[in-house]
Amino acid sequence: EADIYQTPRYLVIGTGKKITLECSQTMGHDKMYWYQQDPGMELHLIHYSYGVNSTEKGDLSSESTVSRIRTEHFPLTLESARPSHTSQYLCASRDITQETQYFGPGTRLLVL
Amino acid sequence: QKEVEQNSGPLSVPEGAIASLNCTYSDRGSQSFFWYRQYSGKSPELIMSIYSNGDKEDGRFTAQLNKASQYVSLLIRDSQPSDSATYLCAVRTPGSARQLTFGSGTQLTVLP
Image (cartoon, rainbow over all chains, first blue to last red; front, side, top):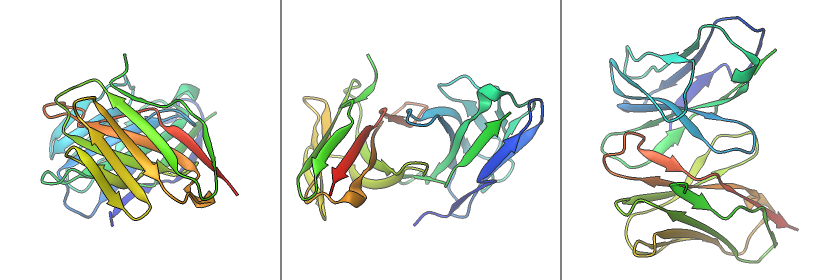
């Protein structure tokens, strides 16, 4: 069973605010991912990391940024939230020796 | 053409029937294939992985892979209302920075 955590689970915030979505895993996985998913729609990869100090942008253009200072921690930051950022954000991780990618519970973000 | 395509759905089957979910992929170099189940408002959870041609069974679930035809399917026997969810097909292609490419999902409803 995967131990991957996301906080907050739900967030309602006003336009222009800076927000950070937290993701942490206790499995020592090197690879971590952020996906964005609108209701009923497919997953879109927005950021990924292969390890500490390694971050890359994914397929979907995003105004968010990420950092990977510690193996277990992969936060995502929006400097200025907009209603178009309203979505569900899913964090995932994978061990380099395994195929399986595990997902966290997600953060539902609503920007007013 | 999308890299990973799934039956558009939604798919409805009566309780106790076999549900068949299909997925095709475009990259012949793909080597690893996954089925995730996602309940409404929840994060995806892995239910099956398959790496070689043929069938792989796990309880009521059977994954089928045909690399020559570039398709992978998931059969759910004795479908239960609790199987009602969106099923996501995911494909891993070596050398792809994205690691996993997801299909848009097929929504399954099992009618009591």
